[in-house]
Amino acid sequence: MISTDGILITLALVILIGYVGDYLFRLTRIPEAVILMLIGLLLVPVSHVVPTKYVALLRDLAPLFGDIALVMIMFDGGRRISFRTPISSSGLGLALAVLDVVMPSALLAVVMNSFLGWPLVYGAILGAILGETTTTVIIPVATRLSISDSMYNTIVVEATFNSVVSILLFYLLTILLTGQFSALSYTRYVISYFSIAVFLGLITGILWLLALSWIRSTKAYVVTIGIAFLLYGVVDLLGGAAVVAVLIFAVIIGNHDVISEYFGLRLNIDEERLNIVEGELEFLVRTFFYVLIGMISIISLYYAILAMAITGVLLAIRYIEVYSIVKDSRFSTLLFALAPRGLTAAVLASIFLDMGYNPYSTYVFLVTFMVIIFTNIISSGLLSLIVKEKVKSEEQEVKD
Image 1 (cartoon, rainbow, N blue to C red):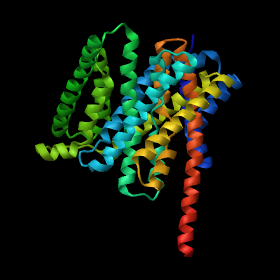
Image 2 (spheres, rainbow, N blue to C red):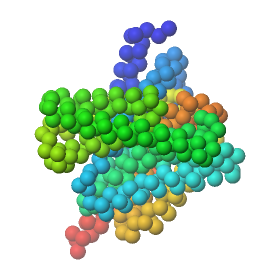
Image 3 (cartoon, helix red, strand yellow):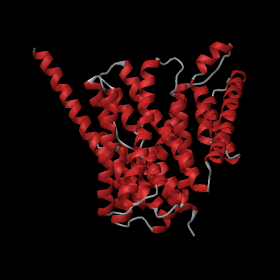
Image 4 (cartoon, rainbow, N blue to C red):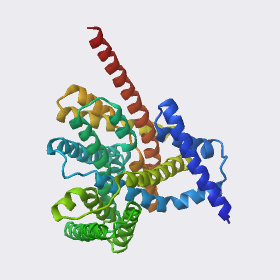
């Protein structure tokens, strides 16, 4: 039996590790995901400092934190969809976001089937999980770069929505594993799956905006996130696409200013405080997953080589995708470098591991762990080169 004290100590250690990881990131510029996962590796697979029962406790908490993470990812992604955003830059970002996920899913289905004999659906699921590029690295980098508003918007839209597309495709593919579906029955199931979510997401979003216009509470930013969690739970119980419901709800909340102008509502949503609450929750969840993945991973040369090969495939896809669509050579080079995998991949790999479709669930989890590390290291190196080249170019212009 694990005592309450043990639980509190374990959770406190995870939070402290998160702050250490954040500090080391600021000090060394090594991606936080890499630092936290390496700390997890050192604590359990390497040194076995953390007792097995506490690792098992963290493992048992993974489904809960997984649901929390999905709500936060979809809520943040939905709030970034602005009705005022120029169509040109957002359209490019959305196109890249879809290709980020669909191309790896399709190609890895074939590659894993051809070379390792995986069923196509498991290779496709691996590709869907690895299609995300993490906003926790990309958006801070984009903020520090001297780029146009259009470029910045494209980067943010892509990094935000490939997470959304990744989650949606992941759940669509896992439906195929739950039973035997004909094309017609699968189509009907998917329509039902999404219709419940769309209806409840729209109704909840509109009703909550109306409620906010009456309540005008100073705590609306906290309650709004609470409504998102409630919506996720209810839709999931009804057998609908809970993540889609939260996404639609978030789109409505994110565009409250436009909607309030149109309908003449007077709303009181403190965006700054909403971002603070959301950021703190996201920090806790992100820390938990990165450390947990390190703790329960296996140090294996086989998985390292396999992950390196898959990382090469992902980079090749990224190169073809970016350079065939984006004509500005400097912008395409930057976009190519912005390809680290992160929280969404970690969460989905953990969720798939809990589904228990072994041995493939375990394979996907262990490969994802290594790919996150490799892509973050490679992306960090490429970005450093780009920044150095930019500095040299600016210095040369000053001399000239």
